[in-house]
Length: 122
Length: 143
Image (cartoon, rainbow over all chains, first blue to last red; front, side, top):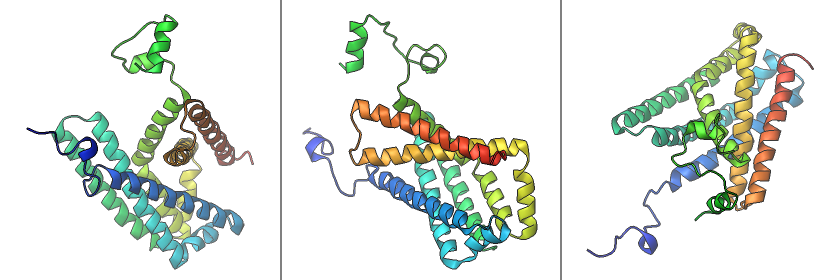
């Protein structure tokens, strides 16, 4: 046997799925959420209209609906990366871990659908 | 050998192996540096926000759907216990937010050395708690 093919200088650096994609997605979605938080706070607080009309008026506009939806989809991806890390750190039996991971994905998909329903109800 | 271990031997501190949860919390054998506290709270706050996601989506739904549902939302949110939960979730959001920004700076190799990392960790704790206090004062009608 020669030296292992996938460590040290011979480590594959492209397309190997070492977790780079999730790591990057977590950061990108975090930045999107930061921007959304700032935009939401500024538009709501500068509106001086702190009642139902002011609040619903923000989300009634199409571009804000889409911005909110994209942010929430990003949030659910971010949650997936974080919760998966927690399962991988603390849950060692493979069967239970896989079950929890599948449950997390299904639950987050349901949340994504619910978010669409909420946003297009106004 | 790591720096911490060498220092421990020099100062004659007890060496504890197989460190468990009690050693770093109530027994106090290991004092956690600010960065460690920020790190575990980042995880705890993220998990807490995940667990309360259905509650938050429900409140979001009631706040948007109609004027009547908005009144329902306002009714729920005015309950003292709900306010306390919302204050806790506000802290979770603000801590996760500020600790996350610290992460993004460190990803770009800013404030990576020992002193700076502890300094920024302290700032994360202070800023998130001050902002949470402001939210709390607003929530309980002080201003």
